[in-house]
Amino acid sequence: MLYSRTVIIIMLSGLFLLALLTFAELPPIFYDFADKTSVYIQEGVVDTGVTNQVTAILFDYRGFDTLGEATVIFAAALIISYFAPRKKAPMLGVRLGVLVRYGVASILPFILIFGMYIIFFGHISPGGGFTGGVVLASIVIIFDITFGFGQGRVHLLSRDTKKSIESIGLVMFILIGIWGVFFEGAFLANSSTLVEKGTLGEFVSGGMIPILNIASGLKVGAGLAIIFNNLVKEN
Amino acid sequence: MELIINSTIIILFILGLYGLLTQRNIIKLAICFNIMEASILIFFLTVGYKPEGSYPIIRPEVDSYVQPLPQALALTAIVIGASTTALMLAFAIKLYKRYHTLDIDKLRRLRG
Amino acid sequence: MINIFLVVLLLFLVVVGVYAILTRSLIASVIALSVFSTTLTVIFLILQAVDVAMTEAVIGAGLVTSFFVVTINKTEEN
Image 1 (cartoon, chains in turn blue, green, red):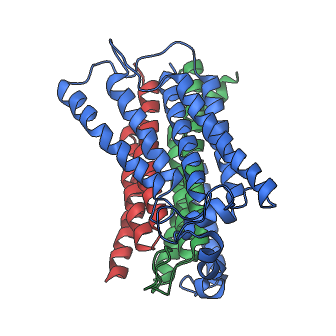
Image 2 (tube, chains in turn yellow, cyan, green):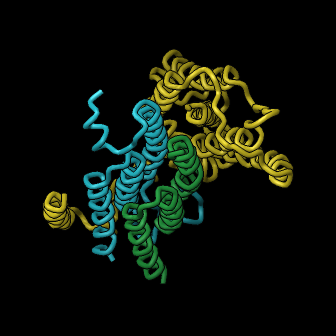
């Protein structure tokens, strides 16, 4: 055991030196990439009509990648639900105190507003469908940890509701993509035929990007909530 | 400055690799995986960074921005990393339920 | 000034990572991973990646930690 650990350390220090030499060959970190390959910065606003360029890349230039990512989450949720047994197992032995329960119940609406704000304003401010979706998933998770165990358990959303929300998000994403095929000439092309383009920097702007934000928010939020619930249910 | 950031990235990656090779608990392996992933994220973000650049939300009064493409890739990587971590942990629970241990040496000796 | 802060944060990141890997206690390791993610959030913010910082704060420090805690709860010896 000791011998093998020594071998591992020697090999990893060799790898460290090799990586250091490789990094020395790379272009310097503070190299002006942004000025030399600035297609996204210079033309992104005109192309997409949103000011947040990360959202523009995620949902317009590389929308197909985002669809693949949503599929990965879908597959993970599917596999974990396949593992989970039908009967529920308790996670916590004790019921949480009254202060925790009322505190959580009074804080949840604000988390809901925060998550929806992040989703709806994802195209003109930091945030977007993924972050907001995870915030929405955390509502379900917190509610289930607080109220979902022990006697008198209550769940915020039933299993089938969560599955429907996830499917609605994915189907919405794909339908918008197919709409792009028919009216704009490419899958997931940002179309202004369904929604008007709006003015730059306002709430209504960017064509389809806010709707794609909402779709991916529903998808990611419901998917992660399903994953958590099935992890808890394992016994 | 560059040397410090580069060596931090490499040290974190090597650290995660060391953990993956020496630790025996499956949950510990998932933690090592997360640390390796974090080093890759720092690398992504430093590629598009420049000191005078601002965050990539286009405003009229700013004319120098960092590159948004590595940030979009890093965002994708984070969300996928969370779901793969959840998958690893689900496998860990399944293994524990069947063999009542999480030690990979003992699991290897059991052989089904 | 911001460079010194960044160097301190990177050093802290390495220290927390070493602790998370080498400690014996699983729950201490998971909490160290949560601290690791929070430090990473500040580093992303210094690197001007606001979207990534928000996502890392929500997912890395919150959601993944809850996944790990649930798993440890399910698999501990009793």
